[in-house]
Length: 128
Image 1: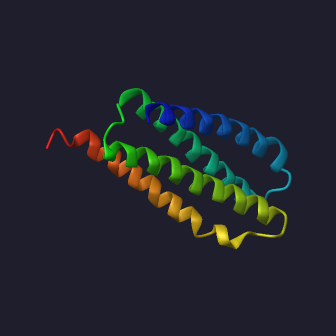
Image 2: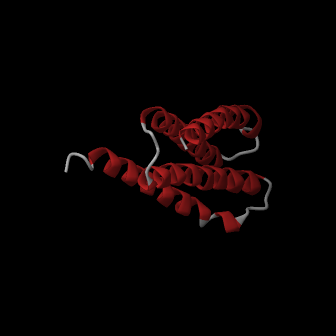
Image 3: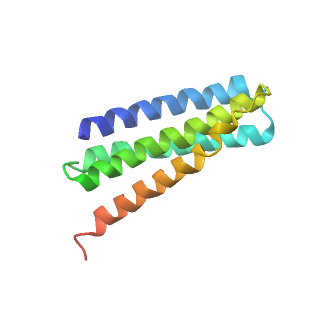
């Protein structure tokens, strides 16, 4: 699980840089200001959580169910949150907004919150 956290963290980081550059150079001319801001939010959250996954992978053994669900929440949350935003922005810029992705974004956000809650609990459980 440690290696998975590190590999997925590195992959998400790599894709965040690529998508950020793609958005800044290619999509900027096709996007409205609001779409560009939303796309950038997706990229930022993806990078933040890529770094979190790397830090978790390097600092935890990831042997417990709590740690497993923490990593899983961050991975799924990042994919659902960021990639649904990308899909919404790109499809809207083409005039064919994929409305089915709308409910996916908050679900991804909820999983990210769950990941942070589990990380917080994992860090303080020995203090209580």
